[in-house]
Amino acid sequence: MKVAIDIRRMTEFGIGTYIRNVVRTLARLDRESQYFLIGLPAKVDECGPLPPNFHAVPLADRENTLRGSFEFRATVRRLHCDVVHIPHLFWIPRGLPCPYVVTVHDLLDHMYGARDRSSLRRSLHLQLTRRALRKAARVLAVSQFTKSEIARTFDVPDGRIEVVYNAIDERFLHGHASQSDRDLIAERYQVNYPFLLYAGAIRPHKNVVRTIEAFSALKTELEKEQQLLDLKLIIIGDDLSGHPGLRRTVVRSGVQNDVRFLGFVPIEVLRIFYDVAKIFVFPSLYEGFGLPPLEAMAHGTPVVTSNTSSLPEVAGNAALLVNPENVFEIQRALQKALLDPVLRNRMKQRGYQQAQRFSWTNSVSRILEIYREVAGGNVSSGVAAD
Image 1 (cartoon, rainbow, N blue to C red):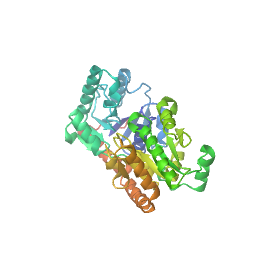
Image 2: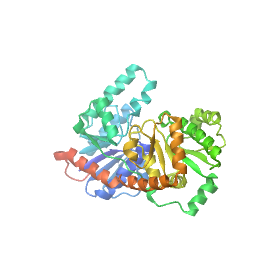
Image 3: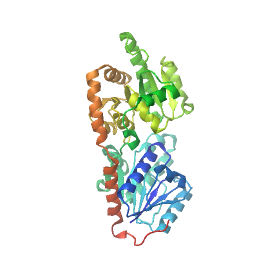
Image 4: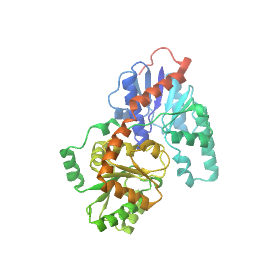
């Protein structure tokens, strides 16, 4: 079997994590099929050492251009592939010469992203995306919530959509933070105080403004009780320069001395922050899956997250679920998770169990079965050249 995988979005925050883990796990599970990783060779290096049945196929053009679509199609035809995996939602027609599988992480581009487009562009985008999904041999949804959104929005037959869950990167499973880890964030980031943590992209649907407002309300309540007066909120994600409104929210809420924006940090450091945080707070308005709460749970950190979209499905009974549009409900959940030791211990144990429910080995084993089902009798003979 010859499988092409589009890796051109490998460096993106969520999709990149997905591609890397799918490729790494396929490399462990399948040494017989030939895999062609189509994109910049430097991106293949991010997957680490791969066996000889994995081949880097250079393609520099972006995936969301017509030229990139034509070149990708020509490459797949030249390689005589049996199945193609496009690991993200797309809308530019590909006209691929073999069956394809597409992974849908969320429909954000048809919700928040569509607000800046004219009605004609929104309609065209919707129709072309529907066409791409309905022509797919199989659509992989990362949650039951996302599956229902795909079926409702694009009228894709239920039998063509399969839920294959995401899982956390194995680097978050390297045990608890050591004293040297704690020393590292104390020295490099000057973090030597108790803190709540938010980690993720900073976009409107992530609801970071209400997170700051809830933290401000929490500080007021803690001051009344004279508890945890040095508590901070640390926000890890995008560069703040593109989001001036957040800084204004901090000043307006009176917590300018208690909120820190650290920007991007590598996974090896992020895992320390997850481990040391008192609470991980993630009241997002919309998530197709929502990995950060699971990453925090893997470290035994109590999680406060939303009762909407896929987050109840991902968090199970291991988190405190809140209405993400109610600042005071978020604040009360934070206060409860912070000050109730019995609850904290229960959340810690349930968090470990919940994180273990999601496994890249299980998910990619099913993806591999789907490749074989889709390829069917179309499997090529011979071995392709590198």
